[in-house]
Image (tube, rainbow, N blue to C red; front, side, top):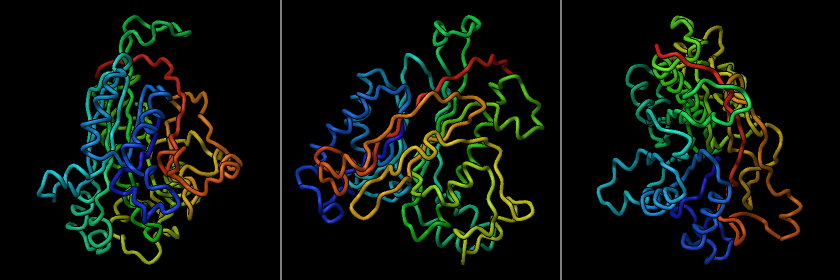
Length: 357
């Protein structure tokens, strides 16, 4: 499951004037949000715009009662806050997983502002400092291992006690439509960090033990699910880069911006690549994942490594006719607790016996 729950601080009457004030309140919306999550009964949840206070007071304890464990990372600006009250309202990303099916063996945190500051300090890309390092978006990563009895009833015979690794990541990329370059750089940083994390984990838990010299094999030696609010449409450079594994550095989303040094070390013949083989679970199935009065489009995604994971299906969303029939011009709405819709994809993780390094 991937779900931007719309944090309370951003759910204001000035932003969503078409929604009754009572339906914007967190006390009302949280019931619908939790209902969406519990009814979905997903083995893995990836959430965005979870406020720090609500993670500790609601999401974690309530989901723990339903058999989940979880991790959380607030946006980077939390480090600049002086008071606990301010810190409590900072939103971030979280990952939850069913404890009877998975155990967490590692976790990683990605703060794009820190990565951009480090990059900007070592080169002359002024836009890296001025445009990217000032944005406090983050991503979080969990390395999970299946419990030994998960494959007990598998139709494919599995060795007794078999466990498999799975990397799950969720990100919340910069929102501004006028900054497609920032979104692209953040996404490239995200992929670069994920490649490092997969390689690190693969050195301990590598399916079929590929030679360490083969970067492509190492990047694809562990199943990956990448979910999030990427604030990017399917015709964007972000989507092209993630789904095709390559992007021309002359792409229109970079127009007028200076990232030459950043690109120079990461591209060959004007193309920047990554070695993950990622596919969007929904592809062209739905017309929107975000539905407001002045914007309706697909900006949330579930990507997965299709050589490891088998996609069985996705949950559809209400079609536009339902919204018209109910005179819903935008969300949130008394019937819909967030301006984003929860995405659900069902995967199976085929048996791939592993050997420790």
